[in-house]
Length: 529
Image 1 (cartoon, rainbow, N blue to C red):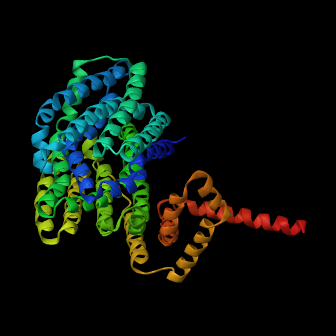
Image 2: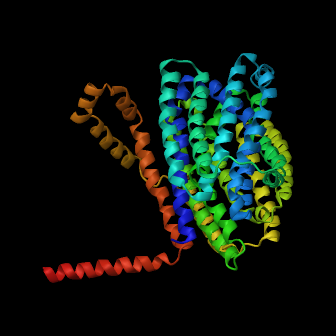
Image 3: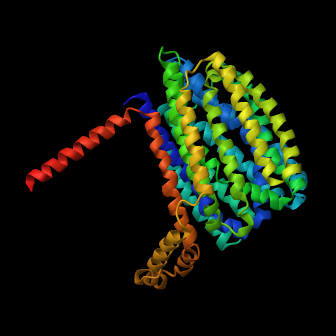
């Protein structure tokens, strides 16, 4: 199997794993939105944002540094990299939390106007420490391409997370605290498994020279990552002071769906492909292979973006109360921002390959400052919509400038004509589905009536009686028209899949072969008759 197929196969498994890891949040979304409402949802968002300031220091740079240093070390020293990274990450993360824990009442009063929520900040800090240790330990899975183990752990976390959330939030009614307690337990499960496997395979060794190499690669990324994170999250705090917690809740709901592109496509794809890039970067055809893979990567991003953008409004009507429905248009703009971020994460390969992490950090810092200023101006003028338009503007600027710097360091011969065709087709398809009703409302109503008939059949009545599932079927029946609309829109947005023929023109030969087989099959049937 070629390295491209290996990367695609492993990224597909990582994608499933990431989706499983986040599915609990979406399963609980209808309950959270009704139990906590917009204000409670805003509190969760602000706590996660505050503690996430620490997480961002560790999440991106440490993985990249482990992979880079591992591939540079000789075979007899590779086993030292994982153990050294574990000691380094745990030591630094434990040093980071005592001060925030002590200051948690003050932080709660500052960001939530109420010191009584300090326990949420403390619990979130515990999740941070456990999760960061687990993520560093899981780096060996990327190196050894053990994507199935990663998926199995995420499946276990999904099951435990859903059960805990149902028990704590819905049954015991402990409130927002239950969400964070559930996160601590699920993060601990993954961290224990990853640490056990990492130590079993590599041992728990420490080398000061490797620690210095990891830090030299990792630390220059931290200022830029922090600045970029502050820039991304600043709009939540600006929204709180200008619009209020209800506005933060709506914005958080809008931001709930676009990151699915990162969870399903960006993070798993880069997790599997980055280590391959480092392997082929020195080869003569390396730049061309990396550039052609970007076209396929962009196709996946745009396909997912079209599906989300065309259906987000209907999904919100099904899953949330009317207070959250204005988030649909905001989410559509943020989908474009998310795609720009994902493209930029791939196209800075040249700077990562040449270890020019200072340049990445500098560009992200400047972009973050611009984003904060733009957010304040745009939110003051346009309210919630201003937050996403300022984010799109600055993310596009970062993408263009960082790509220019990266091309100087490592030139990628991108397939620009294919990229233009893919983007144009995606934008046009979303506009047509969103603006022009492709299917008459009478046809959608007919599909809805058919679904209503199915829901009222004897089998469903039996299930309602025996399994006490009446409420579930009642909810389906209430939203049957929206579900029918969702099915129709999914069918039309799936038309973007045809553009794979632009990415892979050789697939035309497959269609010719299929036609030839169909013709030969027809001839055989004719002879038999």
